[in-house]
Image 1 (cartoon, helix red, strand yellow):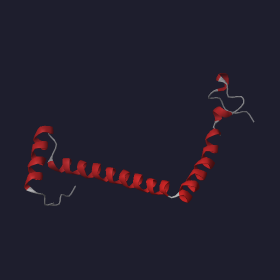
Image 2 (cartoon, rainbow, N blue to C red):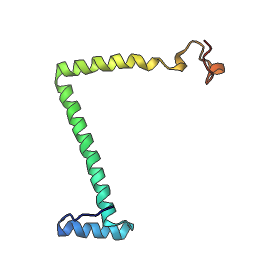
Image 3 (spheres, one colour):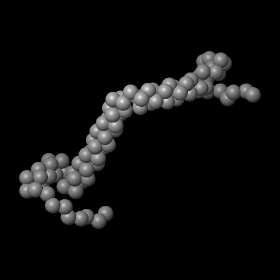
Image 4 (spheres, rainbow, N blue to C red):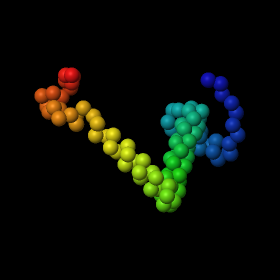
Length: 96
């Protein structure tokens, strides 16, 4: 992996050094993990903000609820919902 230089403040560098010394990880590994964690937090923050915006719009919320309801009806179409899906037929192929 090619490493590039990133400028950080002196205090951040000191924190990275302390963390690296304490964990045995390299500063690069710590920065990589921090960026992944930050990206994940940003993703979920943006997701929750978008969801809140939909909830705040009555028309958009009603449309979403309608779509969710239509998908919920597909949840009951698995093999366990067959009339013959008792314990004796669990995992057995359906005879045609």
